[in-house]
Length: 416
Image (cartoon, rainbow, N blue to C red; front, side, top):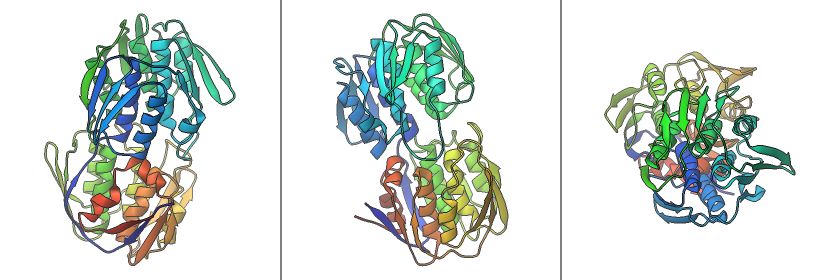
């Protein structure tokens, strides 16, 4: 199992190209099941999760042609309507094949999903919505069995805001008969990116970017070309790294309009930001200021940045408080950070952080995707050597992170 070895204390200087967004690429790839035409995608990140979803799509009969960050999909010859446990167990996003398969072929058999152990993340809202559209759904032997000769439009109000639930129901509704209204829909930029692709494929969607999506079902969808949006979480992660270590970097191929809340908090921390159309220059000298925040759905503070901001707060010149409202198990990185010398205590869904003058390298273990990134940041800011185990979590969502950080001055190597 691979590990990362980090020798801390190095300032970061140089340029980093931000990859395409994982959380946009996964549903967009699943949208290839909705048509027999070619879907030509660019800016697809090179991630373990992307490889997993492509393997899953290929086993359905979807033709996949890949050239670096370009992927072409063709669903003219789908032969299997099943997503097996062996492929689904490691990644919750696999549930996103359910809506497209059911809408286009009238049937789907999808294993209940797995993924990071950061919370329960039930799929009941997906099932509830599809049932309202006329699907017959049973759960047996760890599989969701769904059937419906033709989905019909419905007014669906989810009990909670769910990103993958919104994406699944949105894809299903594009081929349903009549009008579907999705209320309490997720507003994340990645949902908007999927919707923009679907419109390019011939879907009729109103309210894109809002919490109320209105979809007029069409008979069929066609091929399209689309560039996956830049990964706002990766971009903000690198900015947190500069805030923790000091330095001067320029992020390229980024979108500065989709993570305003994180940028505002970074400015509060003392990070100097020069924001362009698709670039961000970040400079940091001295210790960061402490910032308190509460995670919530977009456009609020993203739960996917909670751990990385905590890695900066542990070095801040004062106390801070972090409240996690999305996932109940998302403080598993706290005990690992404390091994490096951080002073963090938790009470329920709130972490209390007392900033320290210095961290000291130690062996630590990654517990989930974003926790992995937070430990990389803490390790780069610590004195001495930090060894991070179980970095397969990191590879699920960051495109060659150690390569990008090494290029801007970090002393970080992968140990096979």
